[in-house]
Length: 496
Ligand code: BES
Ligand code: MN
Ligand code: ZN
Picture 1: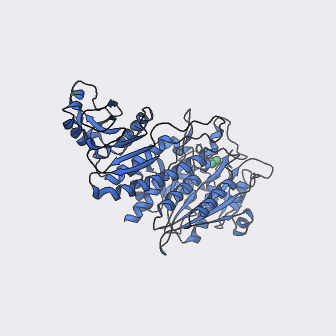
Picture 2: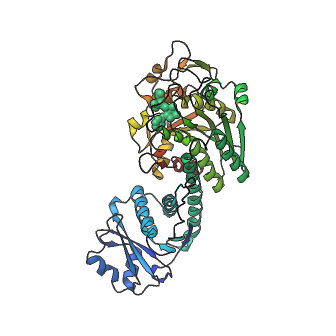
Picture 3: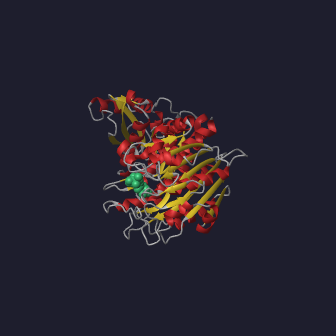
């Protein structure tokens, strides 16, 4: 879809559809009042009769309103002014998007940008509108013979800015919105692709494609023999049961000067059967989503590279399958990680931490400013927090707090769980330096405790996205989270 910004009076716009907000109870927005004046009270009469109350999500389509040049006016309910916040703004854009799909207009002009949200400016409103519209248009039918026809509805959305001075701000917001949407869509596509297509090799090819597309991106792919030389016994213990070769993908985005990079490490298990500690059959197909951390790293790098942000970012993706096989790692096996620490693998289904720990040790090579890992790491995370926030844990509270605040801004929420020393004891092993599981208690925290043994050299935060990376049930599909959060974190770093 095409987006644009303009500045002007609503009654003067020649457009197929003007979009005007009405808040509760029965209150016209600024643009609505202007239309009302030129139409001799057309809108206020209609509202007085009770046709449009302003309830959030309510819409009303009007044709040829007197005194205007637009073919149609779409009134959109915005709810009570005092209830307006980031989430309700996005819901309104969502209902707008659905309403626009059901009318004939190919192009529309929105004045919903005059809605007031505490702490959010015109840039935010325009950017998030673009992202929300693109989210609603996403569909994944690459693998169906019967492809959905491209929607006939809206092709172009113009958004109003209060004055001409804000036009360039608006244009930048559209650019960012489009870039972030590309990142989200890539993350969704990779997540939704099945394990027989989206293999570790496929992920590596995606990273190489980024290298070819963006001059500022350099990708390097390590093979199993390279990992062996580096001593990555933990990562290799997971791929031992798979016939697809593991890949360790490193993507460097060079947008800044010589400052240390923000480093993102994404779990890329392209299918997690559990290995010898095999999972039960129900919903096992969803373990194709066990590479959504990796997908979010590729998505975030895409967004950053498209925006050409002046900052350095490194993405590291350990990619492998986790399958049972004659060569597979067995419960009780002990391996040596790249850090030198030995690990007793008591459960081969706790494989995410086994690949991440070597990737986190490898990350040190890039002299990172901060390291953030992103992983569909524990089912326990869904038990603890449900599917609304991702969990965040880390060894540096300013970093954790920055992630929480960036997430709030873009409705990609994270919630902190404690990483207190007391929990470390749960990982004791009788035979190695550390066990790979900690028992039934506090599963998300003990997983993070495990990772913390490998992140002592830098500021680090861990995002557990087990509950947020995809939706289960009849709307099954990847969400693209936390691309929004990570991109916002990078943008916020540039501003501070
Ligand atoms: N990929 C899973 C975690 C997961 C499960 C995410 C369900 C989303 C939905 C991970 O590799 C795993 O299997 N974790 C185990 C850890 C346990 C063996 C300590 C789990 O959560 O059961
Ligand atoms: Mn597992
Ligand atoms: Zn897993």
